Amino acid sequence: MTDPAPETPADPVSAWHRLAGTAVLLDGFHALKHAVRFGAEVPVALTADRAGALALADELAGDVREALAELLTEVPHGTYAALVPRPHPTAVAALAVRPSRAGNLEKLAHTPRTAPVVVLDNPRNLGNAGAVIRLAAGFGATGVVTTGTLDPWHPTVVRGGAGLHFATAVERLLVEELPPGPVFALDPEGEDIRSLKLPDDALLAFGSERSGLSAELRARADHLVALPMRPQVSSYNLATSVAMTLYHWSATGGAPS
Ligand SMILES: C[S@@+](CC[C@H](N)C(=O)[O-])C[C@H]1O[C@@H](n2cnc3c(N)ncnc32)[C@H](O)[C@@H]1O
Image 1: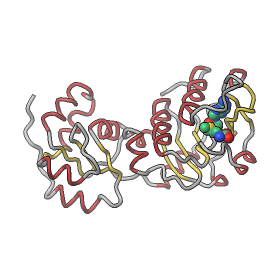
Image 2: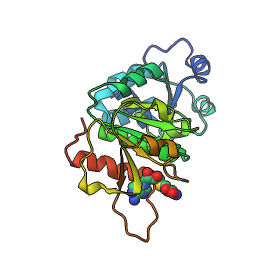
Image 3: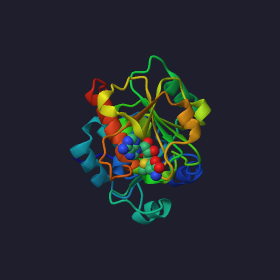
């Protein structure tokens, strides 16, 4: 199917330069598709292959195809490549407005909460954080909160999250700022998760890759919860621990919406 080129924003490349410092980079077709599906505001979206991008939309994203056709402006490949850290195979890149902290805090604190908040206590690995945001989106978690210095909106985290930051509330907070709700902190020394039902209003907290749960988070924890693991194994990877825990929540009654 061929599309007439949409009305081009006056100068999309100038718009890109103006917004790039504060906006969220959506790197590739799939990130843009997810962000649009979950209501992101996308002031500029560029592609070096508009026909290819819209063919992908026809195949994979009929629900947002028209929105993508409206958004995407074609530019020469060299122009596109100069704007992104490394060109994506789909030759699509867009900038989205980062959701407001106030809005995210409201979503995180909203009661009654119908799905848990995932808390990553001082995570270190940007790829883990992105994978966790993708998991949280998939399971319909209320949000992902990080403590410590890692920025959960870092471009590498956004890339790992495949544009799904817009499907959940993502914020960095201090432990004392965590939203209300019972804290179930994951730790190999805790009670076996298989004997527990995790409530929908839980905060599911996970420790740092390096040192596990901090003293502050332990002090805030209402329950310590363990994932089944053979004695000779020290621990699981952070993102896989989140996956198992969210799966347990969903399998015992919590449901992705
Ligand atoms: C890579 S582990 C941390 C390992 C770290 N060296 C430590 O001393 O705890 C990251 C986080 O995943 C969760 N985790 C990993 N394996 C777990 C298990 N068997 N039971 C419960 N939580 C686990 C915990 O929240 C842990 O803090």
